[in-house]
Image (tube, rainbow, N blue to C red; front, top):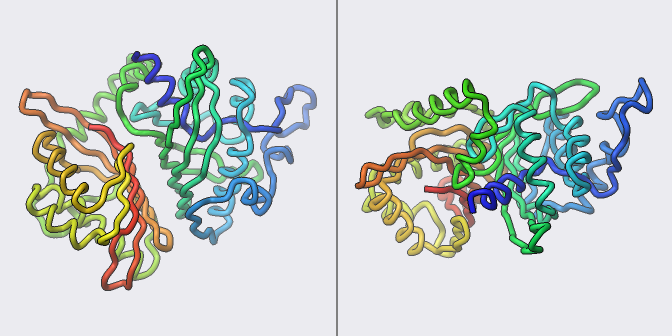
Length: 357
């Protein structure tokens, strides 16, 4: 069962493989540069016709446009097996790239080893692209995939969320510097097996540091919840959205009664709140929060990212769960919020959250 969970959860990351990309022998020519191959550099306008984004937000800088193009070309590179995936990876990654897979920090080589196992057993098909929020050298993505077990032919829908920091490599384009794909869950122990002993110690230290966080007693929420990887928040509306998100985190940490009152002001009356596989309204949000706050003692303690673009915001944060039986662990959450209304009366009418507890 653990292997099955591992394969399904790992396979949902976007860096996959492309219909029509073709697997090239890079040794054919000493002058061949894979990053400049036209196969991997189809124009954005053409790709958007094939892979429209359900909730698009704009890109303005060359850096942001480069990220969007590389992401869409990745969608166009799909499903020809591990060798083709690795070939495309030469475009998307550098040898120094890091990818955090379901909470486990992996080198490119370790990530490739894990994906070799996944793609040998699972056929992955791309579905709808919901969000691609880009700010500076960061992107937050949400999309759908379908996984078919090659042995049993069982098919599973697997929604994917991820946050990725890119680096500009000049003529070779935008490449992943470090990414976070998926949320920590049942595959964690299996993925840890790919790490060296030294890396396992470092991974445990990272989790222990988050678990040990004590939130300061302050009303300054910027100080209370510092963003580890801040991006530029442009305009009063975007700053208001960021402020409301921090208030949402803080009200959650104040307990069930405080959060239930907050729900009525933060979410619209007809809100669609997708929490993992559930779709909830206001009352459902309150009931879910009551379970997590009171039974799981879930505290939201660390913010990695807040990306804002037009009416959408994406948040990657970490929380600590403490059970009455002495159980204590740390997990991460990836959430996408859509805001509506005037700047002074913003509310969330759509929210999609992926997390484990």
